[in-house]
Image 1 (cartoon, one colour):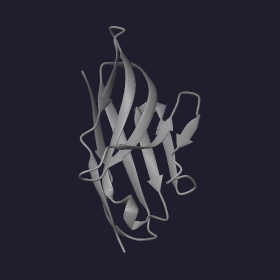
Image 2 (image 1 turned 90 degrees about the vertical axis):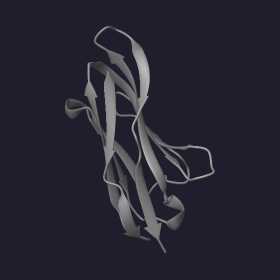
Image 3 (image 1 turned 180 degrees about the horizontal axis):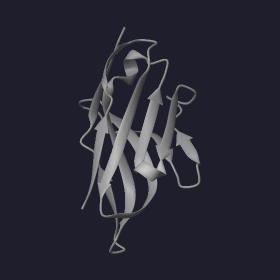
Length: 120
């Protein structure tokens, strides 16, 4: 079983920064893509950023130039550095990852989410 645990959320003023982290633990053989999503109550979960093996990254247009996704493969961790935050970035942020476990099974897991609130 693999678990993802997010941390780093909180309350920040507009223009400020936060750094989210997501650590994976369990019977991991390999981690493929690692992503961040966010969700506002009453709205669909929105993709934010992806980190692929080899270092390639992709971002939603709404965060491009302000957010940076990075990963530490040795620690099975993915981070989301969020700068120049806006009130519209307020959401619960979730990480997910595509895993291959030690038995060779492939699956996707989600973290429990961390709240980010940006005040105007």
